[in-house]
Figure 1 (spheres, rainbow, N blue to C red):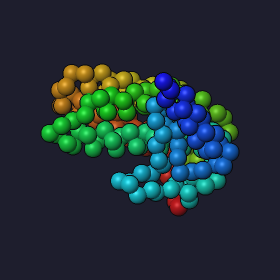
Figure 2 (spheres, helix red, strand yellow):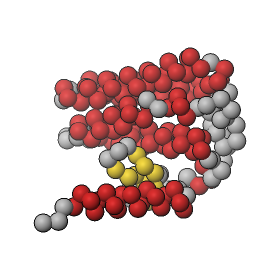
Figure 3 (cartoon, one colour):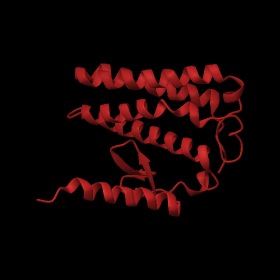
Figure 4 (spheres, rainbow, N blue to C red):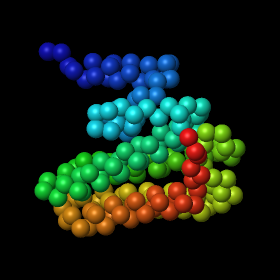
Length: 181
């Protein structure tokens, strides 16, 4: 009997390798459990070419992580709006993706990586302890959201989701300079 796992692993390896070799912007690795299309809007692919065209290295990596956060937040929001059958497992999965990736966010802001295509404010490097504190708040808020899903109490999950969104907003207000495209 053939085992499908080696085939899946081989396919995944080929797809990931192709992304690095050919530099495609259509697919980004998100979490360790799936591939996600960048800018998937209900089956219509939206490529973030203009905004991220010149991004390279850590700047590109952190842009991809921030896009994955936005995608996770949209998926969670969509689930919470469907009051008849909320998929708490999906919400927990997305929240845990944020927890996992937020642990390495600080590494993606080395000194001198601002400017150019980056939307990172210089305040990040001027106030690193405050920036780190907000990233830790992000991690904790995502953990609390993931934990709240096991209660099955919609209002608690909504509250934790709003707290997570508030942390994102707080960071963007202080440390993001939106580039005009």
